[in-house]
Length: 249
Image (cartoon, rainbow, N blue to C red; front, side):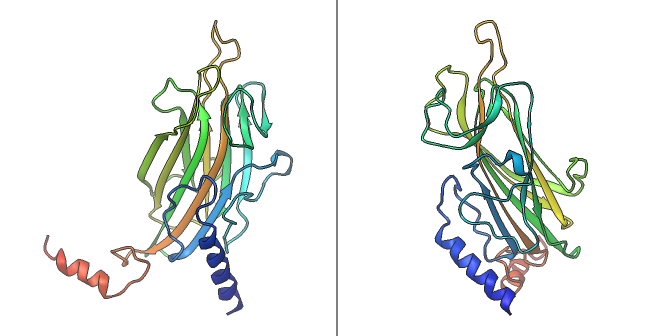
């Protein structure tokens, strides 16, 4: 009972802070089984203490373990954590990047439920990257940290947005947001998510290319009973009504 009270209080506080920062149009899964939430806004340099727990708002909720930023990698040089980068006019502060492709890896513990359940994972990242490619990022999700176990994972939706913010002074980058939902048809005990942002490559006119900056990442998860056909978080007569309406169709 004590555990349930703690979780209830945590969800209540979560709802009070749901509009925080870049946590944009979240999926509102807090009423579903096994709900977890974690936000990283990189307000300070966490690279010396990996895995780093979420440091953003709303405060993280995960009853299955401590989520973490587990790895930060750069492709070339001049890459770091920075509080604010003068070449990118923005009110945002705290991001990883530089004159290099930048990749961040996250680990989220989950509840390994039985096969009559599925697990959904919602991921959102706000970042600055090159503006000459239709896809200037790579988003990966897996059951392991080597990103080789992707069986039974379905991409349910993907939204790629350019944000209405000024470009970098070099003109070689813009602000973007990527939001995706993945379905694990067989619930995992863990999920690993890696987001890579690509810099504008060096050329004759731009010897160091253009910058990349990853500003925030948010991850929500839930478990859904496969009998919960209308996905309202409850298996009841409403699901039977859906079956009745679609009988023999």
